[in-house]
Image (tube, rainbow, N blue to C red):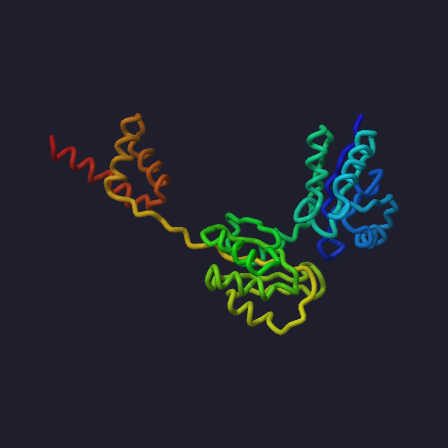
Length: 282
């Protein structure tokens, strides 16, 4: 019988943020595949965990994933961890996860800290819909092309960035997207956590000249959605179609309201005018 691959989320800064289930899993598995064993060793030492570790990072893909797969097929249970947060997000974990799924190896996620969610919820920007776009490209040309592809994205956009490239990235974003609202979260959950909220231009001014350190997540508000103009004829045709399908007037109004994102009062008023017109025509 094969073993199980556990995806264990670890603290993004504050070691107290680890879950009881994560600690139990790290103690009980046969092996921990760590993005950086030096980083993970600090966590394990803090909680007196002595489970053996093996490195699994971007420079050890391919053959290492195959070896871990062999261990799993032999019945060993393996926990995969990244340096911080949830493994498989902007780290090499996806390859092993996909390989396990392909070979019917059970994959279990042990939820916990995530820099994306932690930063997004304190940003003040809309959390109703959002995208995660990872690290913007390092090359100025590729970075510009990257943001141009996001020009019409209406959802809140979440990114990771190196402190060394933050200001340059914010400048490119402002040149391409305009001076939108943004939030920059640095060293989330750590002693010197910083949450900056403002616009791209004020963020550039705020962080320019500073010798930034630490992990950075930043958010940019989405573009304003362009709402197509809805004609009276379109509304009436839709109302008539729903009524002809046997809907009640109330349900027809409700469906048209949702279909075109119109105020319910306007659609109801159009329904009344339609009824009045039918009566006058009799």
